[in-house]
Image (cartoon, rainbow, N blue to C red; front, side):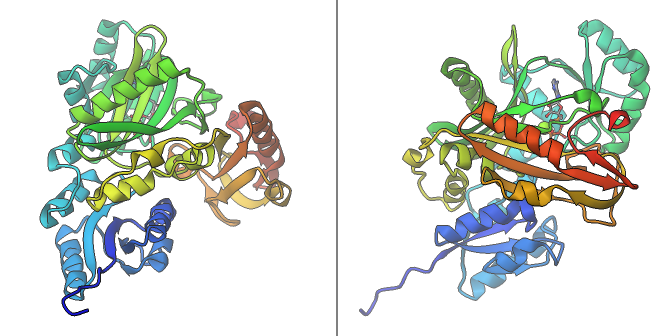
Length: 428
Ligand SMILES: Nc1ncnc2c1ncn2[C@@H]1O[C@H](COP(=O)(O)OP(=O)(O)OP(=O)(O)O)[C@@H](O)[C@H]1O
Ligand SMILES: [Mg+2]
């Protein structure tokens, strides 16, 4: 009919094309949304999956803008930007601003990417947080620690992610090395000291619109056998559903909503790291203005509850309404992910894979090193050797599967076979 313009499909710009972003690319396609995907690595797997792609470093904002304008000139209906897993809210903010799209503000991007700015914002807005301070020397750490009168402290760079440079300290004599380690990991030479908060650690993910916030992502973090990584602190997996009862869960939901609003998030997503302190209640360790990478929003939550909130995050980026009904759980299964931590050395083989692969409850098993690679001493998330995800009717059954996997999969390193459970290297 004359005068009718056929609707072009919408296209979303996605930053990053690594394994961490494949789920959001697939989810967009399932929604009938085209994807324009950028990654500096021309071999990144998501580039092949995308509707449009380019091997561009997305930190180069003028180049990104040029890429989007080219697509627009070719008639592609690019109308939003987002990512998952990649901690770049400051870049998303700039791109969204340039095209007048929905996105975090530049202010949110700034405070979300600096752990000191973030804690100051939370303090100013009355969000419960641990004691914290920027520190310039090991002596300053010792002085503060004494004043705070707490058992353990955390020393971390303010500007990194994935546990890079983070150490949990119990003894004064560990301070100097931990300070130097955090400093050497910081790109801006900034180190923060924090009181260590005891209690169950929880990951949350929330979807926010102007007047509503729901938190469909809620997982208990697993920190088994931390002496295996000492003095590094690293989670070795997570659980859905949480062990918390509904009132404790509601308290955490309330906290992460307040924290996200304190962050300045009006419409968008936020990922919270919370500790449920035994006497002080839920407290914020930090918050990210983005979707998680790894398995949280991609596996744990959809497999356990039936909710895929990555879809809602895409709708928000495209300035469409969110269907909150779709964020209500439709099932309640126990899901666990666990990572592999073999000792350092040359990887000569991995045994037990076929036996585990056959198990129907094992929905994911990935290895991040191949035969011939040299596995380093694993000190941050990026160095982990692999992951498994299992689904079962309840936690006990899922735990039994995890135990079976950790005892069956063996990494052959320098001629010997090792379990990759988080156990001390000396006893492996
Ligand atoms: N003040 C604290 N009290 C208790 N635990 C903490 C504290 N600060 C950090 N942690 C623990 O150390 C982990 C890493 O610290 P942090 O989150 O600051 O660094 P990160 O580089 O963002 O790492 P991650 O990707 O693991 O979140 C946290 O996830 C948390 O488990
Ligand atoms: Mg963190």
